[in-house]
Image (cartoon, rainbow over all chains, first blue to last red; front, side, top):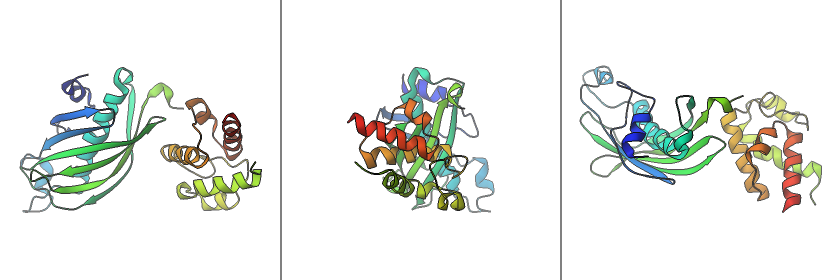
Length: 148
Length: 85
């Protein structure tokens, strides 16, 4: 599966698609990027006259690149429209603010993928290479027929 | 050979961080169900299973995992896997 094919299989669309490019992906992890366009809707309100990327959005970027892209790669042919995807836990530290027009890189390292649960150590860096967020995210990715 | 009671105590230590129902945990018996009684969510149940694997140095396959719904089933599977070693 090519990196483009993985992005095409993501179950998100604008305004909630937060993956631009996958740089590297293998069975142990993934690295990808996202650019924060200044016209994104949430900047109008977070904060008033002072746009800063909300932590929940940073978490979502980390989850879409670090967990969902990797999960699609790992499930390979068994991933399809009937695959359920759910975020199950996240523990993130937010170290630096991310402003509009910044491009971030997400680096995710698989901790385990067992019984449909994918858990990863995920880092987000800004274009200077500084860590802006770091933490652990887990989610469930299983075919619907496997859920009781 | 470890006793039944020892295994129960060890399992209690393993599940403790994931338990959402303290009362049920305090009154834990072999019949205690991980999801219905202890209210451990299915995602955290995976961590319980992985912690059990680590504690006893065993590998739990999908089929065994699906059977591990309560303390008794977990004890039986641990015993089988330990015997296979």
